[in-house]
Image 1: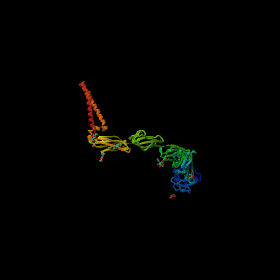
Image 2: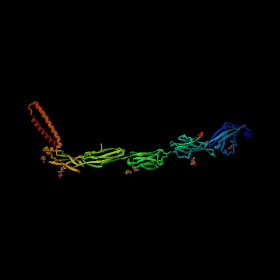
Image 3: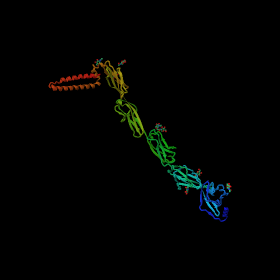
Image 4: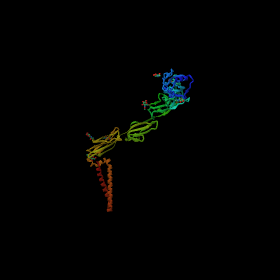
Length: 557
Ligand SMILES: *[C@@H]1O[C@H](CO)[C@@H](O)[C@H](O)[C@H]1NC(C)=O
Ligand SMILES: *[C@@H]1O[C@H](CO)[C@@H](O)[C@H](O)[C@H]1NC(C)=O
Ligand SMILES: *[C@@H]1O[C@H](CO)[C@@H](O)[C@H](O)[C@H]1NC(C)=O
Ligand SMILES: *[C@@H]1O[C@H](CO)[C@@H](O)[C@H](O)[C@H]1NC(C)=O
Ligand SMILES: *[C@@H]1O[C@H](CO)[C@@H](O)[C@H](O)[C@H]1NC(C)=O
Ligand SMILES: *[C@@H]1O[C@H](CO)[C@@H](O)[C@H](O)[C@H]1NC(C)=O
Ligand SMILES: *[C@@H]1O[C@H](CO)[C@@H](O)[C@H](O)[C@H]1NC(C)=O
Ligand SMILES: *[C@@H]1O[C@H](CO)[C@@H](O)[C@H](O)[C@H]1NC(C)=O
């Protein structure tokens, strides 16, 4: 029945109703797509799927199996669903066209066209022909970015630091081409970026982005280029820490602001020209005061690009008029002179042992205490020179004093005080005990000996050093006789006793005068007119004399 209606329509002029509105189905390349027939609202009759003008795919009656045409394009790739929807497997670009579902009813034929649109996602961006460096101010082809087999064709956009680059035809040139593969119908897009670098592009991040209507944007891996630019300025530095002194090593460093930096430089030193390869430093070893001067460095290929700086080598020469051990006689004149040659103004300080001196050593009359080690420190700009000398004041020995003292009931201690340099040694003319000596300080030493004199003795103390010998004698009497020979000894012992004796005598005279005055006043008051001066004065003088003698004897030893 349906078949007859269909044939009738085909043979006669039959009303074919074109359903308004073209439905579009989008399918992914290689996938299976389903084209609906009137949205699945076909309940009866005969359905035929066709394409283009005469492309037959299949025919199907309700409730019957479909009959497939022999169309090579679809024979093995299609199927029909219960609701007459057409299923096409493994769609390609060739399937991107309009398919029509014809439904033949009892009296009419309805057509439902469906447009199939195929899309294909682009491949990941690929960077090729990438350069490594770009020169400032020069249009350089940086790289090519490509993406394959897309439909529709993908766009490529170049970015620098997240900002899209736009072709301006001069500083930036972007040429994009799209190729359609004849066999597959898929498009490849490739884009070449030519770019004129600026110094500010050091470290800039370039990348390309694939944009496609059906997929999220895809960024290429970042591209970093070396930015090359010529040197504009050369700088010379001193790497070593100054100030410099003789014997130091001074390292100079030459730098240029170009990129890549030059691998070699020329250093100019005191009229000498030295080219260093694969380095930018030059070391002046063991500099001297003659090294002071202007130093320069330049590029090898353009010597006018240069820099210079002055270098000063500090020096400090210190010479004393005499050094080592200086022997001088007691009482002589001595003056040290110092000769300082320096690159600046040095500070000089003198010290003797731990004592700081105000000026350099100068003596009109040398004393033993002037002996010692003198040190002079001269310093300037990190330089320090120390010079020392030892002054030795020498003199033949002298005996300053020879005295005796009571050391016990029967002992006498003799003390001999000597001065001289080298240290005087002592020799006593008697045997004794308890030999002792004080420390030898400033040329002075005191020797002592204890003796027990049995008879009157003359003891001599002899002191000597390499420069001479001297002696002095003293009379010593036995202790038991001292009382009887008091006056004799008093003379010997004058040194230690005189002061005491004079004091006592003076005291006694004062006492006597006081008594005399008191007595005179008394006499004047109670016995006026009968007072006689001469007697009393005489008596008083005699009394004091006796007292004096007693006191002296007691004081003597
Ligand atoms: C329809 O096809 C199925 C399998 O291809 C077959 O088993 C069945 O007999 C067919 N029906 C008719 C009416 O030909
Ligand atoms: C890119 O490099 C390839 C070789 O790697 C070369 O054949 C091709 O010509 C280059 N393309 C351009 C545009 O330079
Ligand atoms: C690709 O570029 C064209 C032309 O500039 C533009 O119209 C289109 O929207 C772009 N497509 C995508 C996915 O960005
Ligand atoms: C200077 O350099 C020389 C050789 O390189 C080295 O032997 C010497 O120790 C250095 N002198 C100083 C003060 O660093
Ligand atoms: C440094 O130079 C001085 C004088 O020019 C010389 O006496 C000395 O030996 C040198 N020292 C070295 C380590 O070269
Ligand atoms: C010192 O004593 C010794 C014996 O011990 C003696 O031979 C010598 O004569 C004595 N010298 C003096 C100066 O008394
Ligand atoms: C010691 O000398 C004194 C006077 O210098 C003399 O009076 C005395 O007799 C002498 N004694 C002896 C034991 O010689
Ligand atoms: C003491 O010195 C004198 C000369 O100054 C000398 O004649 C005498 O022998 C010396 N006496 C002694 C004990 O050394």
